[in-house]
Structures are given as structure tokens and as C-alpha cells.
Picture (cartoon, rainbow, N blue to C red):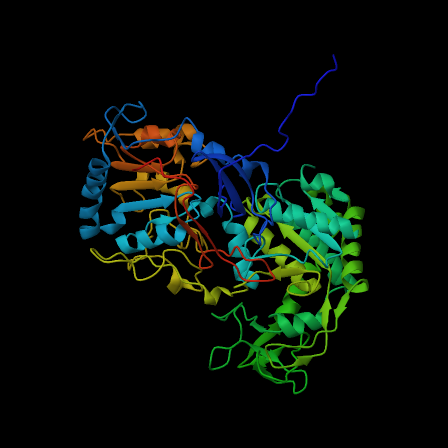
Length: 603
């Protein structure tokens, strides 16, 4: 009897229905198709029509099903009945939970809104959570960015109106050399993988600069193993080499940057280090045609990078001259920095030479007329096809802010920002710091704040200080100690609240923020703070803790009231251009997240 092959269904039906939403397994915000079978999540794949990921989905995105099925899901509100940390809770109804929470918080709003501290993790719905905190009136709100990407974001906004990843991207289709500084496979992974594929297919080079050769660095054409935390020194050494060789884009610097702006250099002047401005507050440059100072945006001028100006006995020099004086110093020579960076001097020289060669010998010209901001008509676009991308590998250090600024300076000196083959901003960026909100922290009982909590200070008048000069926020963000903490300082909340510095709070409300585990790199000490009691009264030093999360994380055990949250497949989220764009450089885009399955946390 002949053997019969079994009849196998090689394409079984995966689902009864497909619903589209936005992924939440990292902050990339890819589009996803969620397959449902009998009303349950069966499979998650990428949405091929989505502009960000075009159907590509990483393993994390596919594993989103585990968010819904996790056995650690919180299913009902809980009230602590034993000591903090004991894990002793009783289930209560939502009506009881909400009555408890409002009973604690309503008196605070009416009398002292600052005694509520509301901090969130990476909730991707800060347009809602920040609005709620603003309406409550507390100055004490921020998300996780204070110990995540703030160095990168603030450095980019203050330097050129936008940063890597969320604000811009390499020109994947035209760049001929891509440098990756401290980039792992955690952020923006799908667009980067797609972009790297396009670069490699064209034969363009990729150089990875990272202490370890993993992920993207493993597929790079060259890998430079750098000593952790010394990226800024390497970058400034590259700038030194380019300045010495004259391989910088002087025309780009003069036309499109503040390099020609005049700076007060009088050590005895209260305005030392500040721009020379006209009566309207506009920075002044020297016009090469007339030799006279004029407003930087005056039509028809040719800004001068070389000559200064003396006014009222005070010498003013262009930004570029001050920069050149500093970084032409031998302090930044490859031979000086090599040992600290862990890179041979010859290799630093070679990398600088490669940057110069590609930028100036392989320049791109596109026959596309355009008009610049002064009204000058150009008959073509000139591109320096060197692109760079960086992430927390360079920014998550004590020198991260200045390291990120140095990298943007390198881009600008080469003329690679917003030019073909270089770095492209995503709409609505670039936006200078002046176009961003300023922080607001003046609490008034019974009233909302007069503006958003977070922002970009431009001077002492923008700091979050009380009339007597004390910090207005519990995390001491936007103070003389931390003036540019644009995302707040969430990691300081528990320690400051425990110390009563700058003041005591009544209720700590955390949302998706497992701070008992990852607050200050000392878990044991944080747990002590959460459980510490006043020796005189026996009450907890931090009187009340409310925690909202979808899972029974470490923080749950130390809270007094637990509010179960939804997963990203069960809720609406607004992922707005007002926060950080999900746009691609070619077009503006926005996204929403909407429920594809019924919520389990609350009927």
C-alpha cells in the first residue's frame, strides 16, 4: 500500500479580525496590525502602510501579546493593610479607590497644590498626564526623561533646534558616510535597521563608535572601541583636526549659523560672553561689504567670520574666532587625547581625514533652486554627505549634555545639518529654544498652573524659584543647581521628598514608574526612604503613596493605594506633534493609540 502524505494546512488562518494601532514596546511608535481570534490577541505584526516602520516589526513589538497575558497583571484596586513592603493588601472597588484618592488630593489642591508630587514613567501620553497635573495646580510633575534622554534632547534644542532620533534622522538615501555614536538596538530600532539596509545596499560606509561591538556596530564597516564616557573628547579632537586642515564649510557657517555673531569679550563687563545686539534684541554680525555691524537677518548681507568690532571700549569677536581659538589648542590634539579615549592617534587622524574627504570631495549638488531666510536665491543645493546618529551611549554620562552639543558642533562645522546627505529634521522641527515653552512652577491654591511644567529656560527669569529664591519644585529642576533640566529630575523625587528638601510633600503619585527598583541606583536606600517613619509620630516620612500600573512591579509593595492601569492595546493615547514628532523627514505625521481589545483593569 502506497504511503499517503498527510494533508497539512500550510497557511492556517491566524485571526478572525485585524485591528490597527500604535506599538508601545519601545518609544519608536511603529504601526501594528493586531490579529484577534475569538476576541483574544493571537498575533501582532507590523503595519505595512505605516510611514515609520512600513511593516517592519522587531521582536519586542511582536512580544506585545505578553503585555496582555502577563500573570503579573493587576486586576483590581488594592489598599494596603500591612506595613509598607509587606505586600499585604485588600481588594477594594473602584468607587472606594477613587474616593480615597480624591479624599487625599482634593484638600491639597484647595490649600497647597505643591504637596502633591505626580511623576510618570514612559507613558507616551504626556499630553494628557501633564495637562492633568497642570489643571491640578502642582508644580511637581515630570516624566522619565530626566534620567533618560534629557541630555540629548536639551543639547540638540539649545544648539540647533532639534536632536537625534525623535527630532531628525540621517538622509538615508544620499549619505555616503554614517557615524553611529553610542547607539544600541533599543530606540528607533526599526527605522534605523531599514535605513542601514538602504545604506549598505548602496555601498555607503558605516562607522560604529561604541565601547562594545554589538548590534549595529557588528554590521558596521569599521568599529572604533572607545573608552566609555570619552566620546566628547574624541569629537573635539576631530574638530581640532578639521580646523587645522581647513576642512570646514565656511560659507555654510557664515550664511546659516551664529558663527559670525559678535560676542562681548570684556572680562570686566557684566555682558561678557553674551551676543552684541541691536535695539530690537537681534544679534549683530559684521557685513563684509560695509565692515559695519548689522542685524544677522538683514537681507543682502555677507556675514564676516574673521573680523570683530569695538564698541564703547569693549571688544567683540565672532563666535567662530572664539571657537577656533579654543579647539585649535593642543589640548585637543589626537596625541593628547588618545590615551584617555583608548584610540590610537593615527586612527583619530584617519577618521578626521575620512570625514573631510567625504564632505568636500564627494559633495552632492542637486539642481534645485531655493530661497534662504534672508531672501537670497540659490540655484542649487550643496550637500555634505556625512550623517551622524547618537543615543544614550554618549548622553547618559555626567558630561552627556556637552558631549551631545559637541557632536552637533561637528555636524555644523562640516555643513551637514539640513543639507542633502546629512542630517534631516522631522516636521515641525527645527524649533529654537525660544520657540519652546518656559517652565511654570508658581502654585496657587485652587487654580491650575499658568503654563506647562517643563520647558527650556533662556535666562534666570525662567528658573523655577520661589520669590525668596528657593526651589519651587520637589525635584529641584530649573534651579541654579539644575538650570537646564528640560525633562525634570524624576530620579530625585523620592530622596528629596524623604529629606523634606526643599519642602515636605503629602502625597506621592507615581504612574508607570517603578521607582522602588530604579530610582537612584541604590535600591536598598530607596526602599528605606519609602518605609522610613518619623520617630516622634510613627507616621511615614512620605505620608501617602498612590501607584498606578498595569503590573505588580516592585513599587506596588511600597504604595498605600494601587490603581490598575490598562495595557497599550486596551486604551486611547494621543501621541502628538506637540510632544515629540513621529514624523519622517519627508512629511509631517501624527498617530493615535486606540483600544483593540476590551480593557481588563476596569469594567
